[in-house]
Length: 284
Image 1 (cartoon, rainbow, N blue to C red):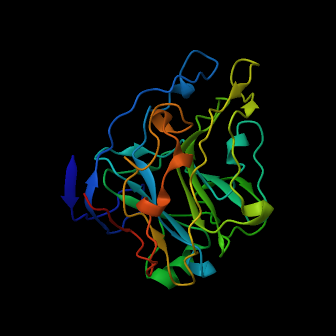
Image 2 (cartoon, rainbow, N blue to C red):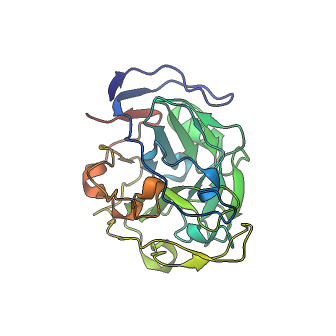
Image 3 (cartoon, rainbow, N blue to C red):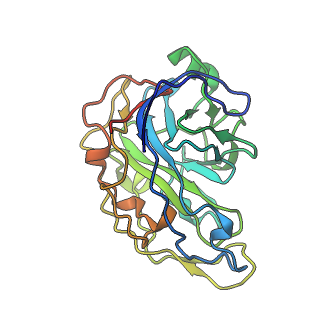
């Protein structure tokens, strides 16, 4: 279903703002991927699919660093099992949460929700710096306590040359996390900013048993961008994932999608433009 909309206010806890969202399509519901949490439930009872997508990222300058997320469905989404990170080692969270210098893993707070066809913006730095840059406050900040800090090493910042940005989900008790959306912004390079493969990695998290679970094979065909959005520019999503990533039920994502297979050269822009937080424009 395609819904052209001019959106009004962002209903997210006590936060409110205005944004527009044009011709966003509801995703096709998926099926459970069958991974067990060790107590008989599948993935601890997480929903089988997620309508959330990364939609815009700013790498520089530091006061304007941000990550935007859009709800592509008409239904409200409870954010309390969602995590955001710039660390490629995010998938070890059920066993050990650790990050490299300036990286972070943060969790949306209990009670946070994102209404249907709405967007939220997470500032990497302080809300005051974000507001000075864009003229309005962010929905959340990585550093001000509005999100739960799971792991942080020094002052968090997005590397100007590029690094992975990952939205994922965990129920807090299963062996494995579940990918929701992944984007390699700019050109992640070197040991610290590389995006590793978790294919076949086994780990035993805090579930009821002592049996490790293994991640499915990541196709890992997602590519870095040819260049990084420089200061005062952002990279934006321009297409939905359907038809541009493997969605056959065998991956580590929602509904078994393989978020590491998305052709982001098609779904994200290549001609960077100034940031436009709280605004998403996706064609039919």
